[in-house]
Image 1 (cartoon, rainbow, N blue to C red):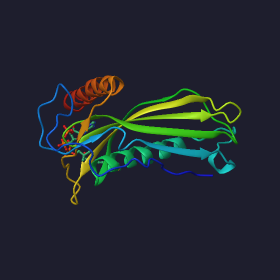
Image 2 (cartoon, protein in one colour):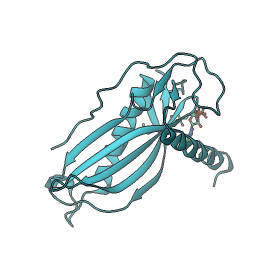
Image 3 (cartoon, rainbow, N blue to C red):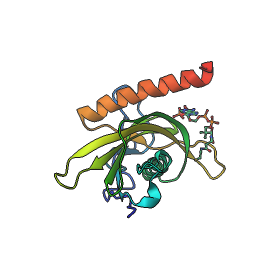
Image 4 (cartoon, rainbow, N blue to C red):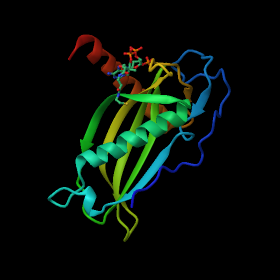
Length: 186
Ligand SMILES: CC(C)(COP(=O)(O)OP(=O)(O)OC[C@H]1O[C@@H](n2cnc3c(N)ncnc32)[C@H](O)[C@@H]1OP(=O)(O)O)[C@@H](O)C(=O)NCCC(=O)NCCS
C-alpha cells in the first residue's frame, strides 16, 4: 500500500511578519513559518512491484518517495511551486525487504532567501515492537519559483527549539559549501 503525506498542522503562516529567521540573520520583512508547520510523514508497505530481483526495495523508488516528500515540505512552507536544486548526503545505511513498512519523515532545517533545505529520514518500522531502524538520510535543497520558473523569496523559518537551532547551523554550513561548489566547480 502506498501511503500518503500526513501532517495536519500545516498552516498558512504562523508567525509575525517581521520576525528574524534565527539569531544570526538580519530582521526580515518576510512572513515567518515554523518547522512543524511543514513537517511531513509518509508510510509505505513493500509489495513485489517495489522490489529488485534480490527482493529488496529499489533505491530509485525510495529516491522518488524522498523527492516527493521534500517537495511537499517545501511547498507547504512557501505556499507555491518549487524545484529540486540539489541532492546530497543521500546515504543508504540498510536495505528493506518484502512486507516491511517504510516510514519517511521530512522537515526543514535551513531557509535562505529563495532556497529551503529539507532533511529526509527513512526507516524500516518493525510491527512487532514499533521500533524504527534508519535506512536512509538525505538532504535536498528546494527552491521556490514563480510562474516563470524564476527563484522567488520564501517565508523565513521560525526556530523554536535547541534541536532546530543545531539543524539550522548545520544546514547553513552545508549550503555555504554547496555555494562554494557551484562557484568554484569542485
Ligand atoms: C534551481 C534554480 C531555480 C536556481 O536558479 P538560478 O538562476 O541559479 O538562481 P540563483 O542563482 O538566484 O539561486 C537561487 C537559490 O538557489 C540556490 N541554489 C542554486 N543552485 C544551487 C545548488 N546547486 N545547490 C544548492 N542551492 C542552489 C541559491 O543558493 C539560491 O538560494 P538563496 O536564494 O536562498 O540564496 C535553477 O537552476 C533551475 O531551475 N534548475 C533546474 C531545477 C530542476 O529542473 N529540478 C528538477 C526537477 S524539479
